[in-house]
Length: 94
Image (cartoon, one colour):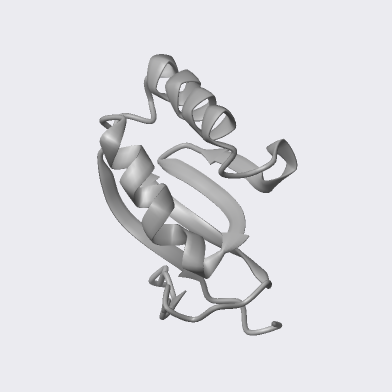
């Protein structure tokens, strides 16, 4: 059986207080130095609380407001991170 990744369309112009689990695919996540730098940048910038951050093998999942995505991307790119994709995984139960 094929594994299919389903994602929702994101609209960062939509203003809402609802938080969503947004996945950022980031390059070189296999390097501990990248993981450490990522956590440091997120905590210094106050982007997300510790309980809203989940490190994955190929990126990071943040529980954030959709309208915060452009600011987060700008901060991460400004710090030298390579971002290969931004997704909200599709969950039919929600």
